[in-house]
Length: 329
Image (cartoon, rainbow, N blue to C red):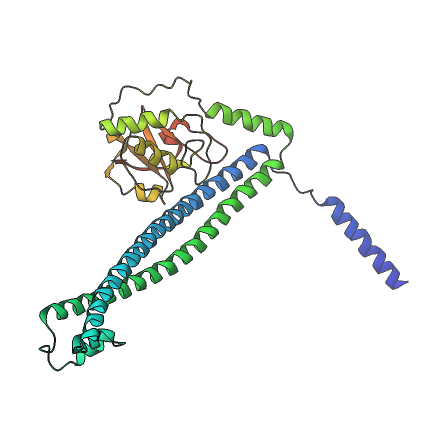
């Protein structure tokens, strides 16, 4: 009886606690938006690192290709040198006298022969020059092959890094989408309407004031970026269907005939730093402490940029983000 009474009391206590426990509260629309915005910012941070790894990969691939081309040409030159000396050997063989220089060439290690030779008088000046060319070409090819091998190792690790950064971006975006999917249809519609009001199409009239451009190329870059208003943000994209933040700015300056680095961090060091009061139309504007966002100054306190996932290329107040400095290209 004591055991049964105790068990019954415990059951009543547990059911009472369950009844009194507050149900888990569903986050509000604003809370979801705040979390999603934070995830999008983290995704953009990862995107710029992804862009940096991708740029490094492309650079390494070009360097490796150049080295491999040089090695191929160098091997052809070496073969020609050997062929010319081989002809000399054949000629001497027919006359029945192969001199020491030709024997040297035909040996398995001409470098070792030269290093150990007691005198160079055995060889004619022309023969010495030919053998030196063979040696130099062999050393050059060995060095280039070693350099290519090192760059291939670097390329492999860069590809691994690229894959990791891509997963980070995709993970953040998937987490954000999961949060958005938790909203009701009405809440999703309200957020979409809010975003539509923030995003300005190319037809919108924005008061950009009358601030001149820093240069003709800055003006040309800004006008190019203006032509892309309304294009969606997509991580890693450089146009013209879509852009990320540094993809837009690098594309815009390319249209003005100016090459700038691919990532926002590299663009931050591509020119002269400016305070907010010094900005002119077309100057780069760098945001956040880790410099992971960039746009183009549009005048009158506005910036033209590709903000983040779920948005389009648009104008926005420069005060909506933590301004770091401007950059004049």
